[in-house]
Image (cartoon, rainbow, N blue to C red):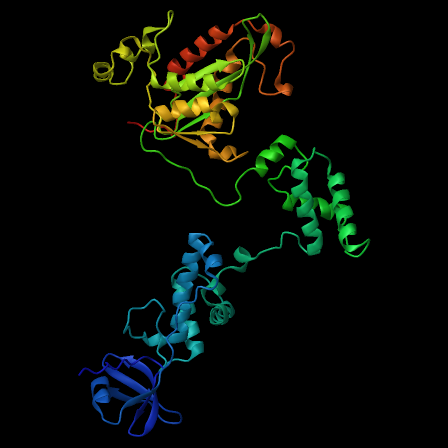
Length: 470
């Protein structure tokens, strides 16, 4: 049979020969026992524990670290938390004789020993110690820190200016705030208006819900401040298109998928190309660019230009992705796969079609992310993907964040390629030059040939921070 070991702590009440003492200090193997109205008694700890009349009658609770509201304390900067923890060690040494982070069994230093010092003396000793460490503090400040620590824990040792929270709406009635948020939500799909229109809509909603004059309405200046705070990131009075785009962002935190090999994840899209082209019938018109990008390597394995993207065009894009890009007359030899950094000889021994191929990798898709365009959800494109064992993954409706890489890649094609081609129309009407359509000189096959050459010589050799090397 084993007995539980006796653990003595500073502040414990013990009974010895019928008298109740308080353990005030431990000096090596000597315990200092004090009782009211009498001089302290010094005894060896071994003799005290071996006496038959000894027993512990009251245990002083061990001071534990109190972090306060964990989310609030953990959200503070690391240097602020470290300073609060350091102060916690000093404060607990004044209060308990030993710091809260002290090793078990650590003996209190003489300047903080309960048997020889008062609280005032320990305060002064701590002030002198902090002064030697380069931290100047008054005794009033130290006392306020002691009081705050006892009431709130370690969060009480943090500078209040760092944790002060000002309500977004200030003193404004919550019903006004709710009406503003409701109006901003309804304004997402409406045409853009002025701040006065928003104010009128909010006032009208308040009167219909609570009656005229029931809820105090803020002044014009205060209302403008509220809109600035509550509508931050909504573009409430700016571009309606931007406002709708911002409203499509996920509310909860979202992450990205990081494929580890080429072809594991690809994205496809078909936006208008900002170039006026002379079509087969001689009419000058706009065309669409359908492109696919590999997420792991940021390569563009295929891109086709058509007057309007159809299901057969999407299937053609998939076929071009799976086959080598042939060299064209007039292309420089540096654009060939034989002159590139790709392992040309090894690849040629596997597929003879690479003998006259351009330096664009052949990547077999495993998963393709697309939007809900008719060309991608057609049976033609689905059957083409199914025949090659490719998984087709439609994105959420009106959620461009599901395929951000292809969205950004197509923007880059506009700024790195399209704007340097004769007949460039600009990305919007306000960016379009005078008689821009009349400058179109290239036919559809010529634009396709220019794009293919630029992808091989320009895009594929462009440094990209997210590109993975294999």
